Image (tube, rainbow, N blue to C red):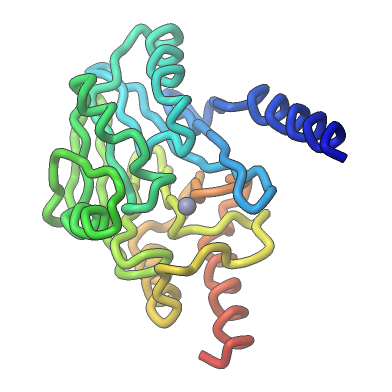
Length: 240
Ligand SMILES: [Zn+2]
């Protein structure tokens, strides 16, 4: 039994190692990068994104698997010949903030909303060095994007990022992939506000061409609608 178990763990870790960091081009200069962790015997992928501007690379969230931090920075340098200059974390959970201290030590400007900073501090997660105090439009090199806090959802502090020209909506864990069967981890969620918050995003950012959820596939642009469906389903079966 022990032998079988060792072989199995060996196979599993081999499998995880084989695809520890996946980088997928989204549209010109936008890349989704995915790292994985084993949760309850299941390999769970986590999506983050980076944008290549003419003033350096911006990370939207950090690798969940912090062993992939330096490989990510090295790969970005090798592929684009550019340094990472900035990161923005979209809520305080580890799949968005793991490695922030390391990034800051490399001279990268790390950002989060104030609420993310406060919750991260309370829950002993890694913290960004710079605070975003309200919804903000950033101009980095030749790109413009806005950060938006729609209200509580997956967590009390979750934000989304919108790229108006490219119509990319970076949703993080506030948005559920259409390939996710359930609402997922809701230990810190606000099930009574989440749907209203999603509606605000739908109203504000019309006709996105890409929506990136925190986990699993981003192939559909129906994931905001699907997120509302999962919330309704959960609330109905729990009589909320
Ligand atoms: Zn998440």
